[in-house]
Image (cartoon, rainbow, N blue to C red; front, side, top):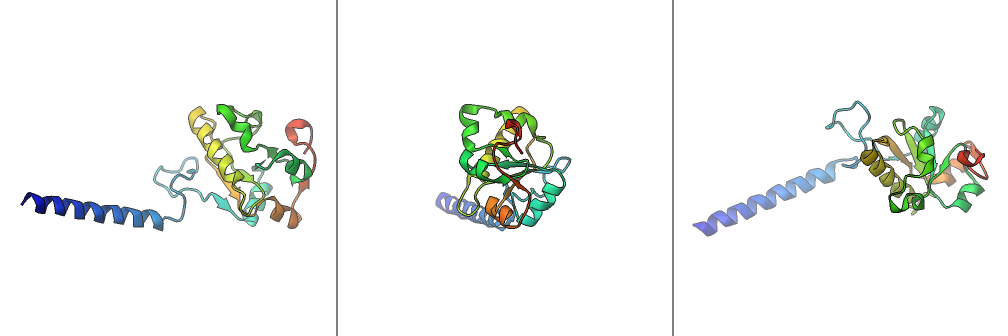
Length: 169
């Protein structure tokens, strides 16, 4: 009889695990994505990846932009007013200087070269970790999926050279 109960418990556990996995896969937003300020904790999470059109809307609303590419790529061309903040800037739990110039309570768009480049996603993770650990915000971070090449190809505002913290645009 004990074997029967053990088998039943194992079968029920398997059903519960399969159901939970199925539910997790049906969620369209990332479960760890940021929640908008003032939203309930169980409210739907913000979409992390956004389109070029959504990024343009956020740019026009004054959102901060962060370029996660290397310095040479950034200086060759970047979104006008974007801060250069590659993943290396977060090494050793450092708080990058640029974060003092960015409103962590507002929307932030992070981009890289698009395509197979994942630097922007990695930078968003670091921003959210710092935001949570140090109370800096960064709960409204988005990634421009198409990256800088799509922004420039669409004729959106760009600049070259150093960034805003270095006397450029």
